[in-house]
Length: 267
Image 1 (cartoon, rainbow, N blue to C red):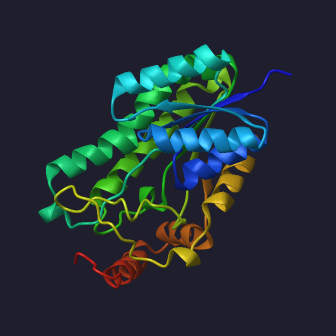
Image 2: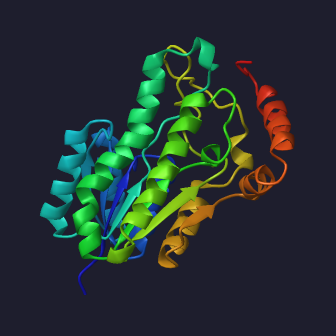
């Protein structure tokens, strides 16, 4: 049987890396994209040692031409695309009044436009195979988080884009899914941008007490097979979304109280 093909952006670490292993284990050929080619090459070799099929494609999703190249290289190698997982993303941690506009622009460019670029240029192949477009959003895309204005805005935009895309393409029977993890073990908090655009370099939470990237990947893959429109991950995340629809001001109070107690909180 011809292998199905999945593209995964932001595949060099965290959720993206876990998804790379999951899709390869399930028999997909995987095209892995990230800015670090060295990390991708190591990941590809590891997948191949486990019997999988993978290629590494250096790609900065904030650059449209990189995204075009990602799609073209995938098709050239595998002749098809069945799943596009828009996972690449960055976070931030600073109050808006002190944040450089370059930080806000970078968040939107990577988290939102990166998905737009990749999806636009992969869409004809997804339609041809009645495949899936998956966007890795966040609980921050359901409820604005203090100190993460740019991050929340980009995730709200991402969810709106995916919902519109789903309706536009109903007649083609493609699958479009928003996956919104809560706190997950990853480097995203260490790599988060502070007000001047430099990296935070530390995480304000205990990474050992949150959901593993492997568990997130497992849930996302199963949800894709069921062709769900959206999936919200972690008990805490589900509770925040549920309560936000019923007692939003109470949720605002809880979020502010929780975030303000983080080590090194910017407010």
